[in-house]
Amino acid sequence: MVSYPGLFAGRLVRRPEVEYFAEQSVVILAEQNNQVLNHICITTIGVDGVDFNLEFNYQSLNAPVCLTIKTYIQDDQFNKDNPVVVESLVLDDLFTIPHLLHGGVLTNNDIVMDTGNVLWCTGQLVYTFKLPLISIIGIVQ
Image 1 (tube, helix red, strand yellow):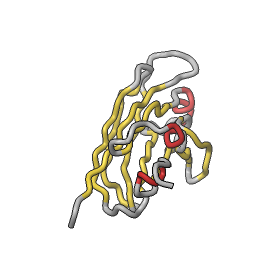
Image 2 (cartoon, one colour):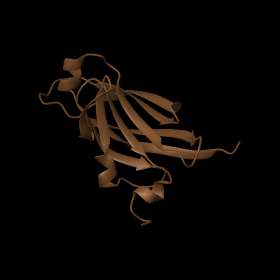
Image 3 (cartoon, helix red, strand yellow):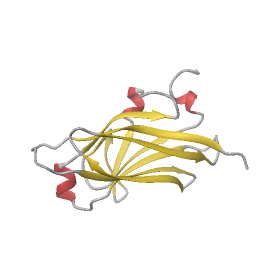
Image 4 (cartoon, one colour):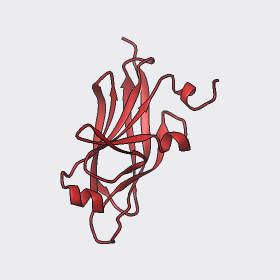
């Protein structure tokens, strides 16, 4: 079986409405064909932000791939008070592309809450990318 390496990377920042000492935690997953390809847990997201790198291997170069950022702490008020902003997002070696950065779908219990790049409540922010990636960034018409 041929393996195709992939990478999600970016920067997450906690953007609280009221400043107090806290750090936010999230689980980041790379998924394809309803299978988790790799995951990491980040427990130190502060107002200064934290970079992440998530390497994985594509199962297929035709099926969409998802980047899922889930709240780790299941306290809705804490998550609303400490939203996490995706400041940059790198797909493989493609740099942050604004329309992709703001293309996340925020869900809570399978209910769509919002779109964009902010995880502002308990739930998950899901980015879905159709493959090949070159087609979604507008290089090929």
